[in-house]
Length: 142
Image 1 (cartoon, rainbow, N blue to C red):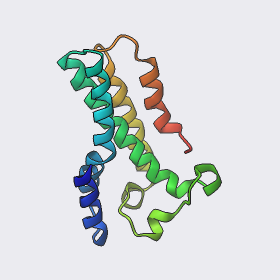
Image 2: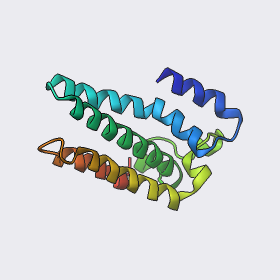
Image 3: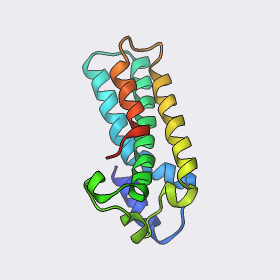
Image 4: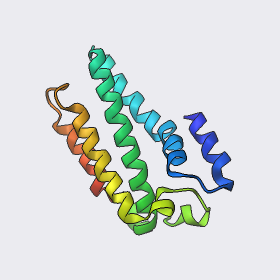
């Protein structure tokens, strides 16, 4: 996560590509969710296949969360979000919204959500909670 934060800070003075944003966010939000998902599987004594599926799920949900966060910073209100909105633009931060726009960002969130749910298929028995959590990335308002 520290490497991701470092890259984020170093990149503040330049316009980043989508690939560079992906790399930074995978090292921050993605790394945190991958670790959490893998720890849950490891604590339950899951197989290597389950660990890999959990990592893929965590990476996809992490990316979807970050992109949705970028969207909400533009389209939400401070009251709804519970924090100031528009700060990314004011601080000239590199975001998916600034680079790609709302429509493309929503497509990405939906695609990542579907990939996250697909990662669970055939590997885990009861996936309802995790699928619902992934689905919430598309609709969350906070």
